[in-house]
Length: 287
Length: 163
Ligand SMILES: Cc1cc2nc3c(=O)[nH]c(=O)nc-3n(C[C@H](O)[C@H](O)[C@H](O)COP(=O)(O)OP(=O)(O)OC[C@H]3O[C@@H](n4cnc5c(N)ncnc54)[C@H](O)[C@@H]3O)c2cc1C
Ligand code: FES
Ligand code: FES
Image (cartoon, rainbow over all chains, first blue to last red; front, top):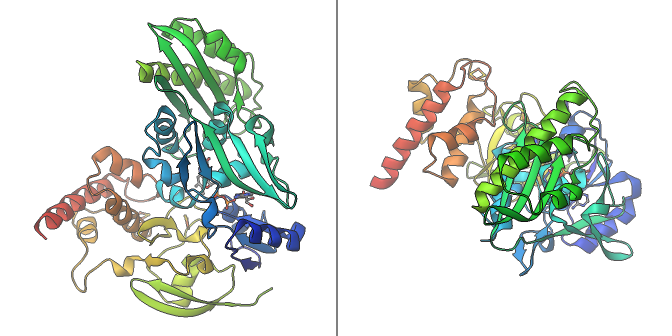
């Protein structure tokens, strides 16, 4: 179908975009890559009266290495991460993850900040943000504020960004050298949204796990970091038995709902599998 | 609300002035305003890839981009692939190796492959498979499409090495 009529604005700065958001209120809607918004406009599920196109705002584009973290402008295309944006474990991890987001042409337009703002439960970038402890820089009428990932995602398609606000930048803390990372997702067809996905990062010394990061996505309203299991992993041998046991533990901690794509029980088992596989990949990467 | 914007689109190296409503997607502007009906429209929600064109050299879904957003970008469509009467290596190999049956998906497949090969002329078979899985074909079963892209990539590399 075709979208309903709207008026179109192309601000050149964050402050100009905020002024337009203030002017149009409930009628105004930001468009970034358009890869989630335009399908829903074409279905007329979304009917914004005014589109505020943030693709021409240079100050929120691209990735910069800030030493202990990467600063990612909201309007950075998914495809930017096809090659490592930084020669560190985090930079390499982002290239593994991005290959699972939609398809090549969609990754040329879709943006990092658009994914976080859209907050699909099966968004890979949302899982990265939660697991790595990202910090979001949100600009609004009252100035800029910073919100940690743990408080950013409020539910399915719901975030801390208000109607009159804009997500400008994302800060992703780097992992120290020596950490290994692993990502695993299951979807029925390559490029489809995942039914379950997991992201793991491990520091392994002499076969023993010294520190761990673990997150699970697509199995609840938003991705979750499994800090209790990170603590359980620490001190354990990096073996298939450990990873299977942690997967089994995760199964008891999640309460997915069943839908046309799979029953709740199936999704719980899938959660165990993707966690064990992501951990296995992280251990291989650390070795 | 229905006021039109005056925009200039650069398509296959030629610039065109046109008046479009903001809601006009790039695929419809190409087809209906410019008469470039090689770009096809299937699902209109980003899934099938029939509408794939190049924007500044990169393949994008023209059903998910508004024409007014494409101002200032270099657009390439299937009409621009051939060099006069000489088919592009991709077109030649799709033809020789039966990379199409009904042809509905073909313009999108060609532009997808053209853009991906421009980024990486040395794609291996697995990378070609990965990229071409972006678009849907209801006829061929994909195998001949993959063979055609592989063969065209080899021709393009050989030609590039000569030229
Ligand atoms: C066929 C298909 C398959 C896909 N598969 C996947 C997949 O497997 N995984 C995945 O994660 N995604 C997938 N996507 C979605 C894609 O990744 C989108 O790019 C992403 O969800 C949204 O980013 P965008 O830049 O396109 O945002 P848009 O579509 O432009 O915007 C999405 C929403 O976010 C708001 N918004 C955007 N940017 C900002 C900002 N800076 N500040 C405040 N609000 C903002 C918009 O107002 C809108 O409500 C798929 C899309 C398609 C069409
Ligand atoms: S018509 Fe654009 S992807 Fe199907
Ligand atoms: S040839 Fe018919 S859809 Fe591909």
